[in-house]
Length: 111
Image (cartoon, rainbow, N blue to C red; front, side, top):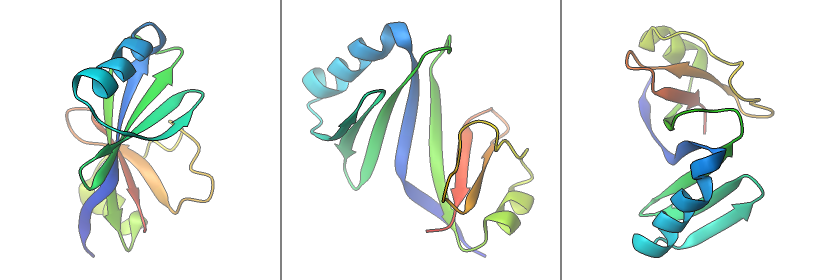
């Protein structure tokens, strides 16, 4: 089983800081927008995508990372993190939400 970085980084931002955060990455950093939705803006971030997600009932900023593996169940066991699938629906994604010891949320999924 191999675990490697995914292509997505998400910054979960409280409602009151979302517009300023999007403007910062768009106007100050100069990242091009690759996708725009009601509560999320995706920026091209090198070979990755940086998502700025608006979270209505959140009081602080969180960074969420994506890890890819051929066996998400084994990877979750190997990482020894808590299964946190209640965080966000995974819909058709084969994977699990977990977190590292510092509390950074990780999506461990197959490609």
